Image (cartoon, rainbow, N blue to C red; front, side, top):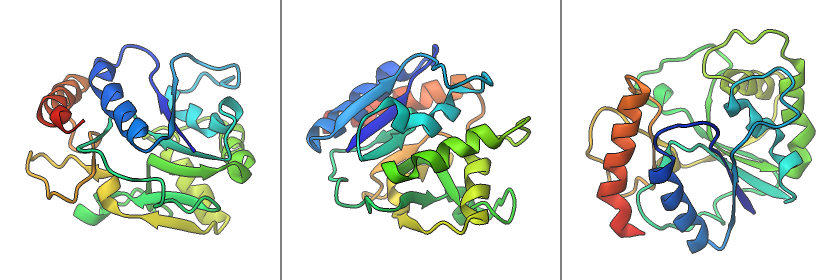
Length: 206
């Protein structure tokens, strides 16, 4: 198992995020791969978030966990046994749980945390190759959901506490294992500040 993180360009928060993610990987005895530059496969010059669709081209492992840089753990926790290594693994998008903000009827899963068996490598790459002129927001996320829906792909649904959205508060249940700074974010500077605060609050757990 390998955790795959994209850190391309100056995000302003990687120096807070990566140490926590790496510590969690070390705790689980799992490899961490950080992609820090564009790849030849990105012929359409799409946003770096799309590059997770090529994760199995870049990492030789039977199972990869694509983990967004703005998804930060709150403490060391075991995660290796929660994934079904023969299926796609996703968490339901918290926007649907919190406010039912559904992009379309095919949308269910957040792409900030995805467990991907190597057998699905071609499936994910086809999403990139099939796109002519991307018009959806949120980069690859809605296209991934469309394809899962259209192809009737079975998904192993993970606990939402593994990909819990920042919701404008700083109070979280002790069961919240990872906080995703993606929803209710006003700007990248806002995200940087929140992730810095997260690091300062939780780094003692690592």
